Length: 306
Image 1: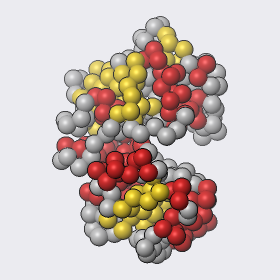
Image 2 (image 1 turned 90 degrees about the vertical axis):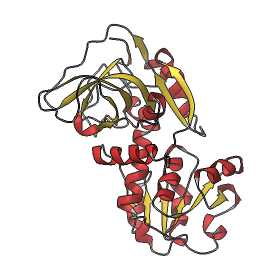
Image 3 (image 1 turned 135 degrees about the vertical axis):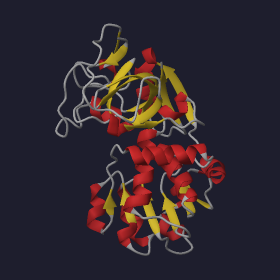
Image 4 (image 1 turned 180 degrees about the horizontal axis):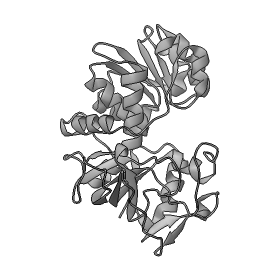
């Protein structure tokens, strides 16, 4: 099997292109997906560097990647929701780290998958799961965003932020996004009613009045300023710093969820959610894709295509 793998933790130098990887096993609850696209996310750099070694069992060689879009190759005997030939997408965060999505085949627990949105290409669908789920779960669960809420999304032009803007708009919210001036027009086209320049001083001082909910995707001074941005600190959610708990808010660690993936697909097919692609790399150039994402300030998703 062709794929990218590494035998030790480290930088992009540990990533190697291989054509002799063993085909993964198909357990009873497993869907074997032939990969068409694999999204690249900052967490892939964290895993590759050993940053999650204390949270998951790791088994080398490791194939990187948690986002996938592809076609079902085979299913285990307990799988009832999918059949060979189905087009699927998902957030393949298994209970261990070994079989990732930057390879021809990935074994995905059925809880991690949903049918691919019909309106999205494989490349677009491959860039949606992790960022989309993070935004969706933060807005609908941690912040309980609903019709008429004024919602502030920090780093709104990033992968999670851009999804959050669109999802919050679909939920009926008045969305305020923060970004550099070069991204303001893009955010307005995504549905932001107001856009603020994060480099122009504390956001609390730029708001006309406190908002109903804050989604922090930055941390640091931005999170410290959050209680002054919102009416009730209980409606601050952060996906980057557990310190938000000390402020009375919620910390969000994204999880695989088939229902939430189905909702994202529905939003996409209803024309309420689009996935801009910054760049698509061939499998053999996965290291370059990691370097681009690690550099930050990428507008749109970076995806590996097979």
